Amino acid sequence: MITVDLSSPTPPYEQIRSQIETMVVHGTLPPGERLPTVRQLAADLGIANGTVARAYRDLEARGIVVTEGRRGTVVAPAVPAAHAAARRTELAALATDFIRRATRLGASDAEVRAALQRAGFS
Image (cartoon, rainbow, N blue to C red; front, side, top):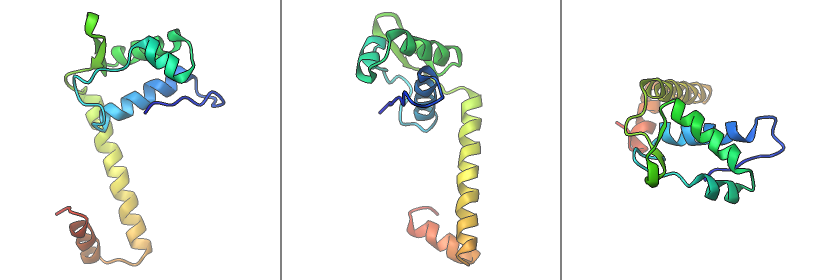
């Protein structure tokens, strides 16, 4: 769900762009997924159509979405390599944070591996 904090110093169009980009990179919005129309999203968020249109234009310029005429704006068929790299970077940061926390708890390497296995990761 996309939200806009009108009290934030970040402009609304950047908030929209960032949230959609994050959802695409994380796979929440898969390739081919149709985005709400500019008019619909603007109405849902209580903002101007031009604000949403600007976010969509920025996303299209970055290769995140494509506009397909009557079909509207959809997630691009392939996530650009830069976004795949961003995803890997974020995953590495999450893994590093997990290891740091486990270390602070005094967990051994074996305990960390066991915890990951119990969580369904091998």
